[in-house]
Length: 127
Image (cartoon, rainbow, N blue to C red):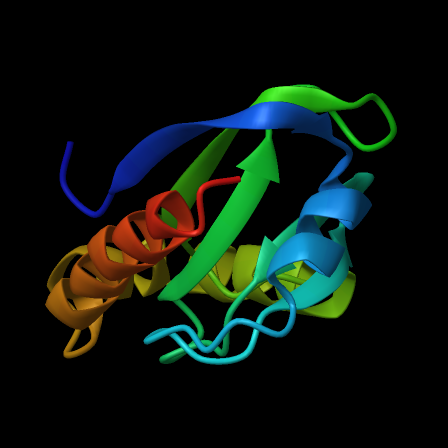
């Protein structure tokens, strides 16, 4: 699917999203310094956005509070409650053209590359 990049990984031990963040927070990533943010009701790990439509996220398959060992690294829009509302409004005002920046924007391919690099770097940590 255009504009989407998802790489899954499995850890040896079970982690909540907060515990995974603590385990990776000090590691130097190509995508930049990780951060733990709220996006709606979900806690996610994010890396610095390239623009409003392109950011690397790490999400847990187990939700916010339950420990699990299955996670995904994804190319998404910029996270955060305020950003989520702003992106929805911008998309609505432009007849969904705003979201095309994730597919065709100047940072789209770079964000896909950063998802791949982050996946390799996470796997190399041996978690």
